[in-house]
Length: 457
Image 1: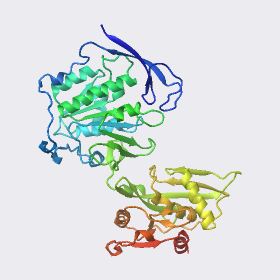
Image 2: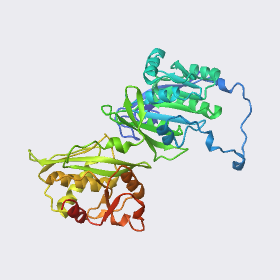
Image 3: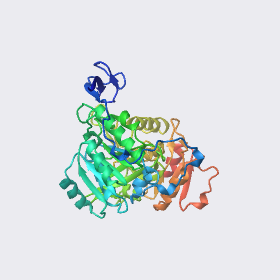
């Protein structure tokens, strides 16, 4: 006789309670608790078919006795994905990829699966039929014969097929569509997602087969049932970008086998996702003639230096309250920089509408863009263009001082590689730095007024 238990789960964060409560004490959301019936059977709930051949129990081993080989990682043939994973796929790892609908999660993993001819891959989809997956694969371009497709939502059937096929890689699209008979709850509920993820994690660790999971996101952009999944998996990747723009960013928010500061950049095309090996060239739009309000800033996304075009527009406010609008940048930090310009340089911006845009649709929080933003705003205010051969990389303080930023050598090298003639940096950044090794003129300043005096005459 099955033992039944009823529990209330928050559908936003995964917290549970023995009774219904209006406000979740974990995430402070209202009316998110839903009753779920959890049934534990007396026997084995899921037949773990992959364990039938092995009856050897695990025994403790000394850490020195364990063999370690960095070359055991599986190379996907996708340099951007390999970079975010820390150098390739670790055998036995559980990787979760989250992102908004239509951003390209399924395309990324299907592209990876069909372009790894040396790896036997099982792609299990609970959202599309086999014909629909085949149509998408035809558009991307089929180059592998070792990719097997399965349209299934039952976890038991997927495990049975995996035990028979013995794949080198398992892809689940998506984890919210799977269900197991061990839990009497609706598909996509917290209980089902947690139980299915636990089974897949056990399968990955015991068979040494890497498993990729695609996860849906909630209205806040976080993975549905976020903490439940993120604590269980080894790596969490976030696929970001605006569906109306062509560029996508793959970020690492958790990685047990590599750095979380790496990221990959892609461009969505009709034939699938294209790797962007030099993102600085595509983030800087070509200009004909001189335009005011445009400045180039050297920033860092993870460990990768990028040069981003900063566009500003300053115009007289039509209504009583001036507008402050930003795209890709924190509006509170913009207000701080405007206050510095008005207080330290005497630029009257309190009656001006100010619009700021970072080209390419990227969202940047690096303070090294401060100097380029101040320069572009001043350029638009005075209608004086900034020469296209100049870029900036420095933080601006409240006293109008130009402050140092980290990894300045990488930023200068990237600017030189793209053909810029000058880069404006903080004087504190060049102490002990050999400027003769750079193919670019490095101009160092300690005050914002000094830099603008030479830049705008």
